[in-house]
Image (cartoon, chains in turn purple, green):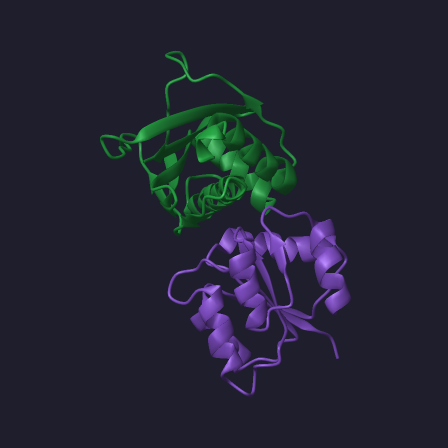
Length: 123
Length: 152
Protein backbone atom coordinates (compact mmCIF):
# COMPACT_ATOMS: atom_id res chain seq x y z
CA UNK A 1 0.00 0.00 0.00
CA UNK A 2 1.45 3.39 -1.04
CA UNK A 3 1.97 6.47 1.02
CA UNK A 4 -0.12 9.63 1.22
CA UNK A 5 1.06 13.17 1.98
CA UNK A 6 -0.84 16.24 3.19
CA UNK A 7 0.40 19.67 2.06
CA UNK A 8 -0.73 22.54 4.31
CA UNK A 9 -0.19 26.09 3.02
CA UNK A 10 -2.50 29.07 2.53
CA UNK A 11 -0.85 29.64 -0.86
CA UNK A 12 -2.32 27.33 -3.50
CA UNK A 13 0.68 28.17 -5.68
CA UNK A 14 3.07 26.98 -2.99
CA UNK A 15 1.11 23.75 -2.57
CA UNK A 16 1.53 23.13 -6.31
CA UNK A 17 5.24 23.90 -6.10
CA UNK A 18 5.79 21.56 -3.16
CA UNK A 19 3.88 18.82 -4.98
CA UNK A 20 5.99 19.37 -8.10
CA UNK A 21 9.18 19.39 -6.03
CA UNK A 22 8.25 16.02 -4.54
CA UNK A 23 7.85 14.57 -8.01
CA UNK A 24 11.09 16.18 -9.25
CA UNK A 25 12.88 14.77 -6.21
CA UNK A 26 11.66 11.31 -7.19
CA UNK A 27 9.42 11.03 -4.12
CA UNK A 28 6.17 9.40 -5.17
CA UNK A 29 2.96 9.42 -3.15
CA UNK A 30 -0.29 7.65 -4.01
CA UNK A 31 -2.29 10.67 -2.90
CA UNK A 32 -1.35 14.30 -2.33
CA UNK A 33 -3.99 15.97 -0.15
CA UNK A 34 -4.08 19.75 0.28
CA UNK A 35 -5.25 22.05 3.07
CA UNK A 36 -5.19 25.86 3.23
CA UNK A 37 -4.76 26.12 7.01
CA UNK A 38 -4.50 24.10 10.20
CA UNK A 39 -8.24 23.68 10.56
CA UNK A 40 -8.59 22.10 7.14
CA UNK A 41 -5.53 19.96 7.85
CA UNK A 42 -7.03 18.54 11.06
CA UNK A 43 -10.23 17.66 9.22
CA UNK A 44 -8.29 15.79 6.53
CA UNK A 45 -6.12 13.95 9.06
CA UNK A 46 -9.25 12.75 10.82
CA UNK A 47 -10.88 11.47 7.63
CA UNK A 48 -8.01 10.22 5.42
CA UNK A 49 -5.00 7.97 5.82
CA UNK A 50 -2.01 10.33 5.81
CA UNK A 51 1.58 9.18 6.28
CA UNK A 52 3.32 12.55 6.57
CA UNK A 53 2.36 16.25 6.69
CA UNK A 54 4.33 19.12 5.16
CA UNK A 55 3.07 22.34 6.77
CA UNK A 56 3.62 26.08 6.53
CA UNK A 57 3.72 28.08 9.77
CA UNK A 58 2.22 31.50 8.95
CA UNK A 59 -1.37 30.83 7.89
CA UNK A 60 -4.74 32.47 8.57
CA UNK A 61 -7.48 30.77 10.64
CA UNK A 62 -5.09 28.31 12.27
CA UNK A 63 -1.31 28.67 11.97
CA UNK A 64 1.20 25.85 11.89
CA UNK A 65 2.13 26.04 15.58
CA UNK A 66 -1.51 25.90 16.70
CA UNK A 67 -2.07 23.05 14.26
CA UNK A 68 0.75 21.08 15.95
CA UNK A 69 -0.78 21.74 19.39
CA UNK A 70 -4.26 20.68 18.26
CA UNK A 71 -2.93 17.58 16.52
CA UNK A 72 -0.93 16.57 19.61
CA UNK A 73 -4.14 16.68 21.65
CA UNK A 74 -5.96 14.21 19.39
CA UNK A 75 -4.84 10.61 20.09
CA UNK A 76 -5.96 9.25 16.70
CA UNK A 77 -3.67 11.56 14.72
CA UNK A 78 -1.02 12.73 17.18
CA UNK A 79 1.68 10.36 15.88
CA UNK A 80 1.47 11.36 12.20
CA UNK A 81 4.84 13.00 11.42
CA UNK A 82 4.99 16.68 10.42
CA UNK A 83 7.73 18.59 8.61
CA UNK A 84 7.53 22.38 8.49
CA UNK A 85 8.09 24.26 5.18
CA UNK A 86 8.22 27.96 5.92
CA UNK A 87 9.96 31.31 5.62
CA UNK A 88 10.08 31.11 9.42
CA UNK A 89 13.35 29.45 10.36
CA UNK A 90 14.31 31.25 13.55
CA UNK A 91 15.58 29.00 16.34
CA UNK A 92 12.73 30.07 18.61
CA UNK A 93 9.82 29.19 16.34
CA UNK A 94 11.42 26.06 14.88
CA UNK A 95 12.36 25.03 18.41
CA UNK A 96 8.75 25.45 19.45
CA UNK A 97 7.58 23.44 16.43
CA UNK A 98 10.00 20.64 17.29
CA UNK A 99 8.91 20.67 20.93
CA UNK A 100 5.38 20.10 19.64
CA UNK A 101 6.45 17.12 17.54
CA UNK A 102 7.65 18.54 14.21
CA UNK A 103 10.52 16.50 12.79
CA UNK A 104 12.34 19.45 11.22
CA UNK A 105 11.99 22.33 8.80
CA UNK A 106 12.68 23.27 5.20
CA UNK A 107 13.23 26.97 4.54
CA UNK A 108 11.45 28.68 1.66
CA UNK A 109 12.78 29.16 -0.98
CA UNK A 110 13.82 25.55 -1.53
CA UNK A 111 14.95 23.23 -4.30
CA UNK A 112 13.70 19.70 -5.02
CA UNK A 113 17.12 18.46 -3.86
CA UNK A 114 16.60 20.13 -0.47
CA UNK A 115 13.15 18.54 -0.15
CA UNK A 116 14.66 15.14 -0.95
CA UNK A 117 17.54 15.67 1.50
CA UNK A 118 15.25 16.46 4.41
CA UNK A 119 12.16 14.40 3.60
CA UNK A 120 13.78 11.33 2.05
CA UNK A 121 15.19 9.87 5.29
CA UNK A 122 11.81 10.30 7.01
CA UNK A 123 9.93 8.05 4.59
CA UNK B 1 23.50 46.95 14.60
CA UNK B 2 20.51 46.96 12.22
CA UNK B 3 21.67 50.38 10.97
CA UNK B 4 24.71 48.62 9.54
CA UNK B 5 22.53 46.62 7.14
CA UNK B 6 22.82 47.63 3.50
CA UNK B 7 19.09 47.21 2.99
CA UNK B 8 19.11 47.77 -0.79
CA UNK B 9 21.70 45.03 -1.14
CA UNK B 10 19.92 42.70 1.30
CA UNK B 11 16.64 43.19 -0.59
CA UNK B 12 18.31 42.44 -3.92
CA UNK B 13 20.18 39.41 -2.59
CA UNK B 14 17.04 38.06 -0.94
CA UNK B 15 14.96 38.54 -4.08
CA UNK B 16 17.65 37.04 -6.30
CA UNK B 17 17.80 34.01 -4.01
CA UNK B 18 14.04 33.47 -4.35
CA UNK B 19 14.04 33.81 -8.14
CA UNK B 20 17.12 31.69 -8.81
CA UNK B 21 16.03 28.94 -6.40
CA UNK B 22 12.35 28.73 -7.29
CA UNK B 23 12.16 29.60 -11.00
CA UNK B 24 15.79 29.56 -12.21
CA UNK B 25 15.70 33.24 -13.21
CA UNK B 26 18.68 35.55 -12.72
CA UNK B 27 17.85 39.20 -11.99
CA UNK B 28 19.66 42.41 -12.84
CA UNK B 29 19.60 45.19 -10.26
CA UNK B 30 18.91 48.74 -11.38
CA UNK B 31 19.18 52.08 -9.60
CA UNK B 32 15.88 53.76 -8.72
CA UNK B 33 15.69 57.11 -10.50
CA UNK B 34 13.29 59.28 -12.45
CA UNK B 35 13.61 57.08 -15.51
CA UNK B 36 12.23 53.92 -13.93
CA UNK B 37 9.33 55.04 -11.73
CA UNK B 38 7.11 52.27 -10.36
CA UNK B 39 4.55 50.93 -12.85
CA UNK B 40 2.30 48.31 -11.32
CA UNK B 41 -0.73 46.31 -12.36
CA UNK B 42 -0.32 43.99 -9.38
CA UNK B 43 1.20 44.80 -6.00
CA UNK B 44 1.67 42.23 -3.25
CA UNK B 45 2.44 43.47 0.25
CA UNK B 46 3.37 41.81 3.50
CA UNK B 47 3.26 43.58 6.84
CA UNK B 48 6.34 43.65 9.08
CA UNK B 49 6.30 43.98 12.86
CA UNK B 50 8.54 43.47 15.85
CA UNK B 51 11.93 45.19 15.55
CA UNK B 52 10.81 47.17 12.51
CA UNK B 53 7.27 48.22 11.59
CA UNK B 54 6.11 48.66 8.02
CA UNK B 55 5.59 46.65 4.88
CA UNK B 56 7.47 45.06 2.02
CA UNK B 57 5.81 45.37 -1.38
CA UNK B 58 6.48 43.89 -4.80
CA UNK B 59 5.15 45.97 -7.70
CA UNK B 60 4.76 44.19 -11.05
CA UNK B 61 3.51 45.19 -14.50
CA UNK B 62 1.08 42.57 -15.85
CA UNK B 63 3.59 40.92 -18.21
CA UNK B 64 6.14 40.45 -15.43
CA UNK B 65 3.58 39.14 -12.92
CA UNK B 66 2.31 36.61 -15.46
CA UNK B 67 5.83 35.50 -16.38
CA UNK B 68 6.81 34.97 -12.74
CA UNK B 69 3.64 32.98 -12.10
CA UNK B 70 4.16 30.86 -15.23
CA UNK B 71 7.64 29.99 -13.96
CA UNK B 72 6.20 29.15 -10.56
CA UNK B 73 3.34 26.89 -11.61
CA UNK B 74 4.83 25.55 -14.84
CA UNK B 75 2.10 26.71 -17.24
CA UNK B 76 1.20 29.83 -19.19
CA UNK B 77 -0.99 32.44 -17.53
CA UNK B 78 -3.47 34.54 -19.53
CA UNK B 79 -4.67 37.12 -17.02
CA UNK B 80 -4.05 38.53 -13.56
CA UNK B 81 -6.12 35.83 -11.86
CA UNK B 82 -6.04 34.25 -8.41
CA UNK B 83 -2.96 32.18 -9.29
CA UNK B 84 -1.02 35.34 -10.13
CA UNK B 85 -2.10 37.18 -6.98
CA UNK B 86 -1.20 34.13 -4.92
CA UNK B 87 2.18 33.58 -6.62
CA UNK B 88 3.37 37.19 -6.27
CA UNK B 89 2.13 37.20 -2.68
CA UNK B 90 4.24 34.13 -2.00
CA UNK B 91 7.25 35.82 -3.62
CA UNK B 92 6.72 38.77 -1.24
CA UNK B 93 6.51 36.31 1.66
CA UNK B 94 9.80 34.64 0.76
CA UNK B 95 11.62 37.93 0.08
CA UNK B 96 10.42 39.22 3.45
CA UNK B 97 11.52 35.93 5.01
CA UNK B 98 15.04 36.42 3.67
CA UNK B 99 15.03 40.01 4.97
CA UNK B 100 13.95 38.66 8.35
CA UNK B 101 17.03 36.40 8.32
CA UNK B 102 19.24 39.42 7.49
CA UNK B 103 17.78 41.39 10.39
CA UNK B 104 18.10 38.40 12.72
CA UNK B 105 21.85 38.37 12.07
CA UNK B 106 21.97 41.87 13.60
CA UNK B 107 19.91 40.84 16.62
CA UNK B 108 16.62 42.33 15.39
CA UNK B 109 13.56 40.08 15.35
CA UNK B 110 11.06 40.81 12.56
CA UNK B 111 7.56 39.34 12.52
CA UNK B 112 5.80 38.64 9.21
CA UNK B 113 2.08 38.99 8.48
CA UNK B 114 0.07 37.25 5.74
CA UNK B 115 0.60 38.66 2.20
CA UNK B 116 -2.10 40.73 0.45
CA UNK B 117 -2.31 41.39 -3.29
CA UNK B 118 -3.93 44.31 -5.14
CA UNK B 119 -4.75 44.32 -8.87
CA UNK B 120 -5.57 47.50 -10.77
CA UNK B 121 -4.42 50.14 -13.23
CA UNK B 122 -4.50 53.16 -10.94
CA UNK B 123 -3.66 52.88 -7.28
CA UNK B 124 -1.05 54.24 -4.92
CA UNK B 125 0.62 52.58 -1.95
CA UNK B 126 1.51 54.94 0.89
CA UNK B 127 3.30 54.39 4.16
CA UNK B 128 3.26 56.40 7.33
CA UNK B 129 4.42 60.01 6.84
CA UNK B 130 7.69 59.47 8.72
CA UNK B 131 8.43 56.10 7.16
CA UNK B 132 11.74 55.42 5.44
CA UNK B 133 11.33 54.15 1.91
CA UNK B 134 13.71 52.00 -0.12
CA UNK B 135 12.86 50.98 -3.70
CA UNK B 136 14.97 48.49 -5.64
CA UNK B 137 14.11 48.04 -9.35
CA UNK B 138 15.03 44.64 -10.78
CA UNK B 139 15.04 43.46 -14.35
CA UNK B 140 14.12 40.12 -15.88
CA UNK B 141 13.50 39.21 -19.53
CA UNK B 142 9.86 40.38 -19.48
CA UNK B 143 10.70 43.77 -17.96
CA UNK B 144 11.22 45.62 -14.69
CA UNK B 145 9.58 45.05 -11.33
CA UNK B 146 10.16 46.87 -8.05
CA UNK B 147 10.66 45.72 -4.46
CA UNK B 148 9.81 48.42 -1.92
CA UNK B 149 10.45 48.50 1.81
CA UNK B 150 8.58 51.09 3.91
CA UNK B 151 9.45 51.06 7.58
CA UNK B 152 9.94 53.00 10.78
